Length: 272
Image (cartoon, rainbow, N blue to C red; front, side, top):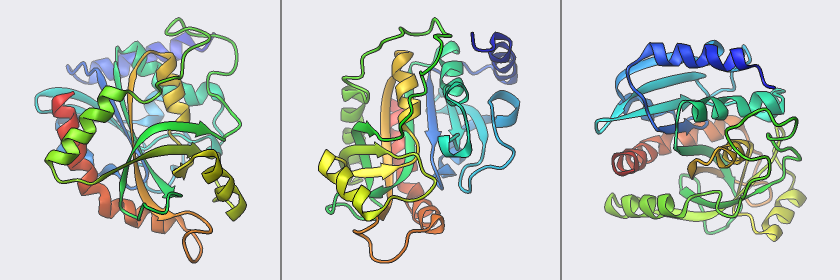
């Protein structure tokens, strides 16, 4: 059984830090942290105090849990996330989502910075994730069943909730935010993909590729959460984009798109 005392300690720290009791969690990807400035009555907790976390964070991932309110509604907001390529185990990867499931979170909004494979996309676009393909070679629910939060074998026919996608489209239309839709391919990293891998992923039906999100969505579905996924296309993928890829390019483009994403998230969270 996963360390029960570890869960209890983290729950206690979070519950004692604020009177807010959110039922919605937002996870912000690389360079997309500007949204936290919109939260009111905010308190912040370092990941090291509540999650399995490495001492060095990936650039663009703050490693802070913010708890505040928006439109009078309480919100949990994770500024940054853990990745398999940092060396986390399956148990460590599923810990944050299972923790929030224990805290009665019902809705999960995941965002990420990723590469575009659909040639109709361009850097700076926001894409609503309609489905994903797990090419990480891992599943975070692997191992002994250590939680009564969800079933051992669980359905993944609607990993991204149709009603939340429709809500996001409505908010985008109202705010004149163009939204793409597509399939996200989860790739383990930390190297970027080769040209041949990108061609294969496109052939499989992928529209965008990144190194996160899929593990969180799998665990959230196990826990019965409703999930909305939003990708920021920060670059076109290897073989589509001319020149070499770099993390700096990802951060710079995500930073420029952060205001647009914040507006979209604000509208969604006020209506969810």
